[in-house]
Image (tube, rainbow, N blue to C red; front, side, top):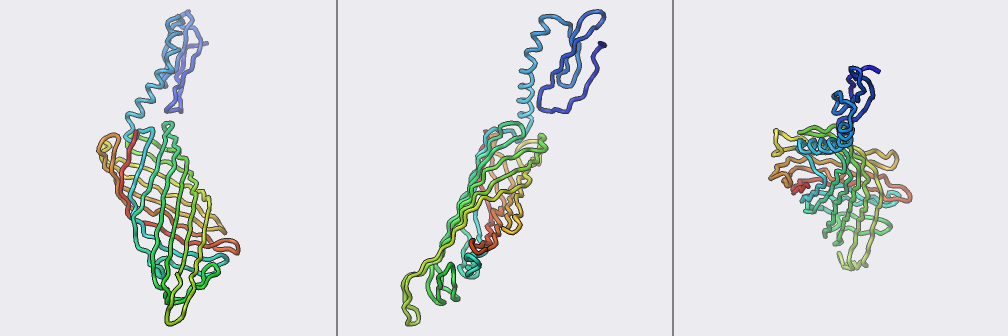
Length: 311
């Protein structure tokens, strides 16, 4: 065998260690390729011991990579205030009746919270889960006669409507590109949805006519998978200022479609804490009504602001 020849490697975050035996100047030798460099080591006991410690050097190298990464973390907690404005409509089962959240109920913007926890268990792999609870109710006077889920609510009656939505979002993210000041990842997320809409009237007299109390509700539970990009860019050579965003969605053919996104500007206080503010399209969900299923056209969007803690 001849002397060592240089070889190229494609792995960037994993130690590549290759040992070749050979002869150099008439003596046995070892060829060790480490960190993409080829060196000659005489075949001696102390050099064999050195080989046992080379994997430890790779761990140190991975730690150094994380320290150079401005977005380095293992656990990340996000807590945001969300000023949401809901819009859209409920369609009864088999399209029996429609209740519009804005033109009829006049739901206003309201405050709620958004939470997320992210575990980055390798340099490029994440597992996370998030939650968005929404609960709003409002009293109003019916401007038209509405038939919803088999119940008829007459014009002029005082009514009460309630909208509840709970989104739980477990997911996995892989960072396709990860550099010191920016990264771009792709996420696969499962949106576990619970959406409930209710309309009710108390017993009352309107225009000299007595009306009995009535109550009607529709509930939608659905697991909706979505895909999309996620990224963060630091605007300077420090972690002081950055922009962050994502875009998730999927088309479900005859069932409907789902889209969500957010964009924020962040200012870091230190390595572990930052403040963020921006705008979020929490959800744009469209589910077509069928004979055995309610229909829903729901959009929730608004300003967000909050804290991010990283360890």
